[in-house]
View 1 (cartoon, rainbow, N blue to C red):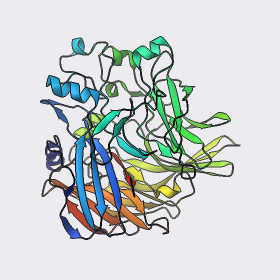
View 2 (cartoon, one colour):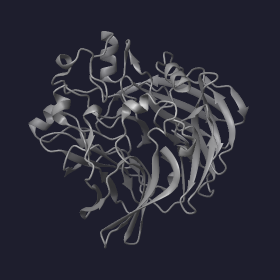
View 3 (cartoon, helix red, strand yellow):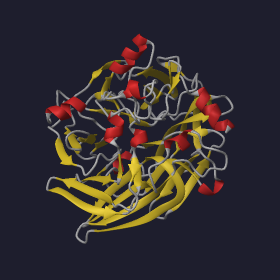
Length: 476
């Protein structure tokens, strides 16, 4: 797999950090009205002092910033200086277990090591005048929006300190804060959650005021320590969680026998529970066995909930994702599936909205939790049988039509939709990173969100990993 090997080798270690480096615009021109800040987060290195990470979610977080102004692009990047990052840099070796990587040395070095590395590598959010680097298993990190310097670990004035039993605090002194918060488009409140292991397995939910003050968390007992990565928030403030029958084996994980991800197993034949949480309590509905990393959107229509999920038939084998072979079907590609939930009838219906395989979806943020029409994502037509998502796609959820822009052999990242003020739902720009296989460097692309036409490209000075998720802000 020459193309995949090229990408993995070129992006395994980012050694240089830049600050406000003006990027050359190598094609087209960036519209002057596209003015603001794109922040992205992802792994900055997949090798740690000579030891390779075993999972794509493990690498140390690196926040990148693209300041678009006057048709120019200024680029900065900086590792998140977490407590674990600093300790390991000082020691010159790996000191902490990660989501998918145990410490070298086998069982003896990993037995009962219950402190896992906060990689701070999954997302970045701008809310309440703060820029936070997020990782779903621990605290956020406060990042200076201008310099990208790590200012502190952030617990919302103690709200994220574990107040459950002494045993719970022993396992997790701090509460997890997921990498997929949702900001209510009407109130500006931020909603989020975390999955907490302990004497009981819990889903802990949070609400943060627009100015950044958090309310005390609410806890919901889980049937098992399942893997919940994302959720939906509707305009009516209903929180929708898919509790899939996919769970961690705590005993094997804490005993050091397996990394957390290697301990995950699915229970085929079991139903997926759909929790709808609001001020009146929790309603539960049942759907077929599946796994979901990400949701595109969801909204209320009278007594019906419509939830658009990127549905996988099972939890993906991460070893196969890391080392796909020629002729594989699309790796880790999910099907955009609409779940229609009858709240009065307690029925759930499923319908595929596109035959394309896709991940890392984006919508016009003004339509979050509201009736909407368009989804943008990384994707691929499974008929092409390429092992990577090498297309940027646009799905019309109304007509069920899919528009695609194929970048093969280059690899695009998450397309972030930046709406044009006062425009229609699909009027605006997509900002995405693209790994150039020929130059073995990364480019920033601006695309027309309506047509998927590339209108501008800026060249980065190095191969930056495409990363996971990002956010856009017109001003800081």
